[in-house]
Amino acid sequence: MDSSTTIQQRLKVSELVGFILLLILVVTGPLFLPSSMHYFRLLVGLFFGYVLARSYTGFAGSVNRAYRNGSSRLMRTMLLMFLMTAIANVAFIAGTKDITIYKLEINPINLGLLLGALFFGFGMSLSSCCATGTLTDLASDFPRAGVTFVFFTIGVFLGFPLQNTQSWIKNSWFTSPSGKLFKQGVYLPDWFKWDHTGGYLGAIVLTALLVAVFSYTAYLYEKKRRRTHQYVDVDTEKYQIDAAIDDMNAKENLSTYEKLFLKPWTLKQGAVGLTIGFILLMGITKAGWGASTPYGIWFGKFINLFGVSTSSLAGFTHLPEVTFSTPWLGNPITVQDLGIFLGSLIFILTSGLWTKTLQSVTKLNAKNTCVFALGGFTMGFGTRMANGCNVGALYSPIAELSLSGWIFFVFLVLGAIIGNKFFKKVFN
Image 1 (cartoon, rainbow, N blue to C red):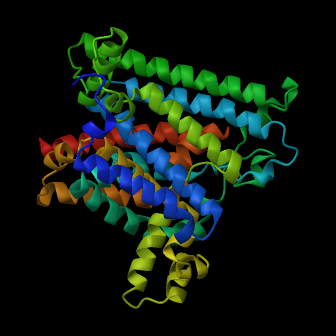
Image 2 (image 1 turned 30 degrees about the vertical axis):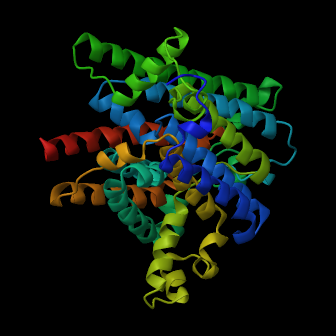
Image 3 (image 1 turned 180 degrees about the horizontal axis):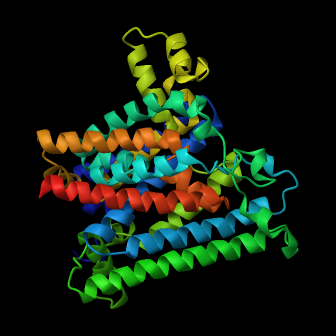
């Protein structure tokens, strides 16, 4: 197709639908959402969903690709993203006299964190997605993501009573002075108060060191897999690399439309995009990225439709009754999660991948349905023990200089290895 082809000539029905959907959301969002902050959450969610889909990025894939294919490219990119976001967050936090104006995820370090990370890693290896990945995959692989989603909501709901009552989830084995102001966790700058920057320079240096160690370990692992001929190309990564190489060598003859909306973004471009979204959240909402808590609330609201009272739901979950009586779109994180799903859907539509996506969805049978259900449930239940998912217990804590995020990361990887071994036995 000639590069002078106009956008109007290039548009297909699915692409038009995608742009119409985006226009409707942007224009009517302020009309059906309760506040400007909810509208902002919608826009950020759309941005996150679009970036995740177009850069073929997902937190679950970072471990699954390494185990199944030998590629550590996504994991190393994610680690770099953690460091970039942490450095950016210091610009907000370091000059703040009262850091409690930010809702930092300085999560407790306890048995719940370890078990929750193991459960979550195990589940995401079975379902090949995480909390946000379930939302994006609902648009691209509804059968697999749909089963995962349903049981994820059940897992979160059944985990609420434990999260809100059990000391092994609520209390931390050890803490730091600033950590006590949040969830009793360890705030890394507290360890480096002597560095004349309030501890922030030391915390960033430690974060960079941890990123370097884990990245180099992942690189050596991939190198070994290649050397022993146990490496298999990841289709999406190869697609991204080939597109980037063609662009550098001026081999691509793409139309304006293809350059703007179709060409895949690299993993690094996706990491930059997610970092930008996180920074916007911190700057405007004074909080990082969260996703999983509304899943359990949605299940509670669902069974409320069948006669379970809000007071009964509140009594079981140990959450305020208003949690279940508030309208669906009254919860800002619900709106943001909805935006993630719609952002991914908009990418599929505007990129012309709708038909191809429909043709490649998972075919369900009794065995894989049970596996996806188990994956969804263990992830959901794990989030309540660890006080978050891959964004609430991993990305946000690390980006906000909490030690808990790094501990979650280690046990998440262990859980994913166990899950992948289980998955291999089931399907081999």
